[in-house]
Length: 294
Image (cartoon, rainbow, N blue to C red; front, side, top):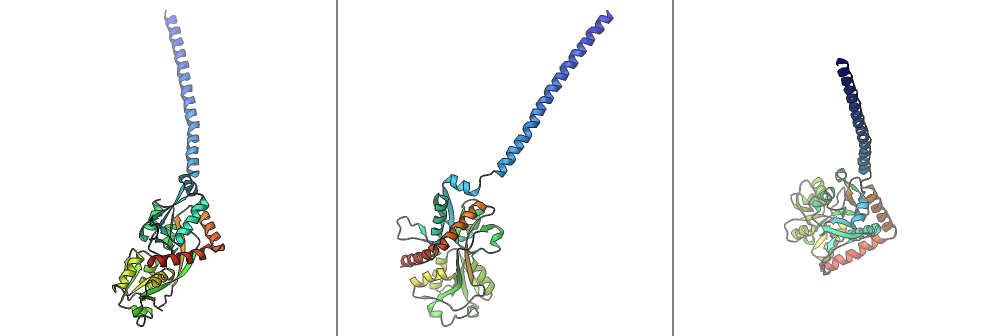
């Protein structure tokens, strides 16, 4: 009887061990399958990261290029008051259209204050910022810039009646001078006119109005832009005063790391420099801005 019980127990234990082994084998197989699947998923995640949609592909997929600008800066960008839609036009907008045509998408313009332009890039509100922006070292810390597409000179716009008294930078000592807020002109005024009071406003047009109303004595302004105000107002003129850092470059700003988009932008700039379009745009929009101001 004991022998029979012992045989039954041995048989039971053997079956139990076989079942346990089969279970372990199944678990190991499942674990192996999960393990082999895990690297695949990680690989896909890595591939998804490295294969993330580029800026250029995203723009093409959306079917539009969104460009941020700051109107009120003729002939670069200004509102065409003769247009039923009051659209923003100018040298920069012609350049923006050339870029959108090159990519093969529609152009959408977002008009805003100059102070908001660069932050709108980093927050993905716009694809490019085109507004006569000077590619300074400080700005290059947060955004990338295209090649220079236009170069001009920084000057002081004054009332013609003050031309005899305001001939040098020192003649502005103790006086108020205006500059567009967060612009190269504001930086220049603070650096080279330390004995003057610098008044910064969001719009160049507002600064010119302050000048005409005798609230300020001069406006630090790009020569190409100032010429439009002089043409439309006989009471304005350039001061002979000269800045040391008078050269001002204009480039397109874009979010860092978008090399594919930057390449296309630089191609368009090079093409329109070589075919003479920039010279034509400066001439055409200078005339249009002057006509609009009358």
